[in-house]
Picture 1 (tube, rainbow, N blue to C red):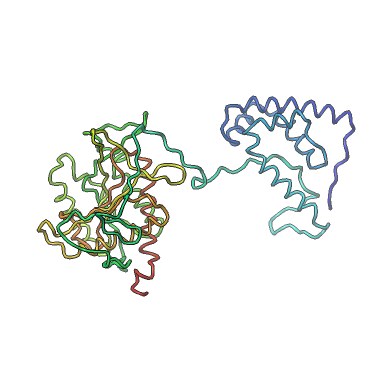
Picture 2: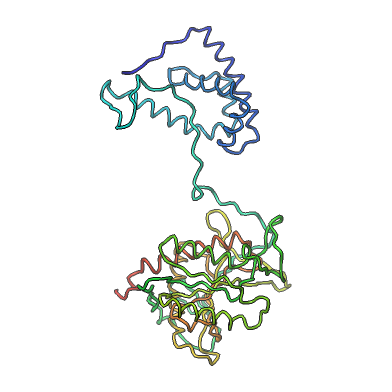
Length: 409
């Protein structure tokens, strides 16, 4: 049955209105320093039970045809914290109205629920905290000058689709070799499919004031919460979320000695691939170092979701330096296909691919890439955002290949 409330006498309405106005003023004052509805509610739960009870009683009156006093309505209208809960209150009202429209006896309680004599008096609900994915990104400014580097002309580049390739090697190739296909495929064997290594693992970023790390040299640290090992961990996490098993080598191959880092990372990669034949993709994660003509560092950025993401770039090695590397073209084709996928959603996220004479250990697999995650001037937050975008693109490329990737046209 539907329970209807009795109308209140006029004198009681006036008294309630005065009390509600006083309660609203108290609530607004008590929550002035709060930034969200939950923190305001916590404050009120500790020190404002009386005012909150009066406010709740007045809001209940909204469902029985009453209205808030003008003073109370004005106070609520000036309180962003209270306004943040308005949608939850309105949603509760809509729910109550829908319940009241059900004919008597039409609804029955579900198994395990207790049937009551009527709907409970409505109360102001506490909205759920937004999920992390719904919260706007906010990055602290690290104070470094930002630039977005994009080609101004195709002159001097090999161009395929949206991808610009800067050939700095002694090898020659043209755009005809790029049709979206590549040799790399995820292995069907049990075990990790992707190996992430860091030849220069101590490479780090420029942190905002108050978030500094202990540096081992300029823009380098052995603290893996702040260097590119952390960035590699973010890529690994995204791939794992997509169901792609990852082996992450967190060793600092450039510390304590920088010289010989590529030899040490090669030994680690070969050992990992011998122990895990299922590894199909090898990703060497670095960060660049860029300065202007005056020697001042700057960061490279792309606007994503209202903040700056670090621009990325693929470095592809060849056999131009005399070392054996028969599959370098397949590495390059994979980089071009992956970059095209990224640019379709984020047109300025990628700097041109750079092809060089050194092979950068990429001979270990036709699916081997070296990626620069921003530059020393970028913040860690900017690099971590790009890491997630790269991880998502890798998962899409290998789990949901395009028609060109699978050989069909």
